[in-house]
Amino acid sequence: MASPTPSPGALPTYVQISESIARRITAGQWLDGERLPPERTMAAEFGVAVGTLRKALSRLQDQKLLRRVQGSGNYVNIAPQAANIYSFFRLESLKGAGLPTAQLLSVDRLPKPIDAPYFGANPAAFRFRRLRFLDRQPAALEEIWLDGSVADHIAPEEISESLYHTYQTRFGLWIVRAEDRVSFAPTPTWGVDQFGLRPGETAGYIERIAWANTGAALEFSRNWYDPSVSRYVARIK
Image (cartoon, rainbow, N blue to C red; front, side):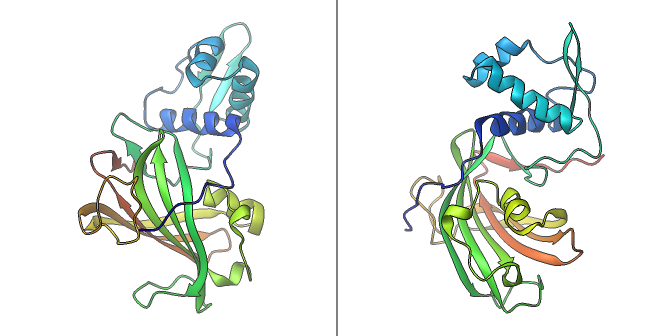
């Protein structure tokens, strides 16, 4: 099995916290108009200083997911236009939502898989293999292919825990829509020991085609997830 290397691009703590809160909101754990717990309570929950927590809340206010009422607190403000880093990440902990993180296993520029659907005209693509966590528990194996037209080379140290964040900051691209096909498939042979399923065991399986703001399909991904740890959730609004 492949040996993982440490993630070189962990997101800042305040960004992780804001994404965790955003996922709770979209999961319905906090409802539109509901007041969040006091800031000191939330800071203690996340194990950070109040200043770091406030920075996370400010980011959510900028994204119009929260509104602050002076002297009263922070209130959920669900906005259809709000776009978070993990807006397209559909796996959730069985307990609900959960903060995604990722460990990079490899990145290579390779010919595109012959069985892949169309996702750009370049015959080559960057293949990212990662172990995905939810609240620090191994939840999924990811194989993500990005059309080779975006760059000649991508170094591991350029890759954030969120590939979509990397797309934005490194290439000026962002994903605007995706098509998922969910089924079951055997766990791949390139898995790592931390993942709960052994190669060949049945895993939940997601194939995705994703389109960028350019209008072009640029990404094809395969995701094997452990149903005892996570579930696929799509909410219709």
